[in-house]
Image (cartoon, rainbow, N blue to C red; front, side, top):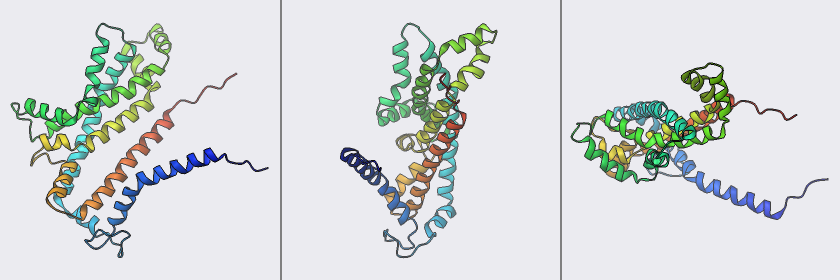
Length: 269
């Protein structure tokens, strides 16, 4: 006997499908337009071509902007994990005076408007000669990406049983050995997810690049903003498509890596 689907459930599935289509439609349209040979931004394209992808890869400015953004994102991911994971562990396991204030301070860049942070960084970095340099962008991006790592990894640490860590210390393991071999593997999927979001946070950031960037620190989002403001370059459709593909690829890799390293659930007796 076939099971009947309740009208309410069917309506919910239809509504969810409409939401997904609404969210994906701009990406699909941009991807289709990027293969149009003309400069009219037609969808669907009348003549399919890789013209704008070839123009994009032939441009030295686009290549340098992409490599700089990639370098920044990789560096920000490393620094965010280096400082964010220990901070998340301290907030999850520690009990000390002023812990709530410290926690709010560490995650405050998430709630503070980016333009306010950008102005503050400009005032701070200008006397130090960091404005217009990749090192200034690296520090600023780390400040806004590290809270994402802290929030994700802290939640994972709070879901793990601290008794396992105490057992490792009771068996003679040092704190560093316990943290590396016991505590960290237990939250490895969260660490991978936090690193992925830190990478994307840096790679997509444009406001900080506008305030702190310059001729020697023109990131890909800054280059895209300048192209939209000063010229209507069809190559923008190609770079937008590649950015969407890169974002999806990073999230898929993070999810796949997290699932492979997630310990199997214990069977109930």
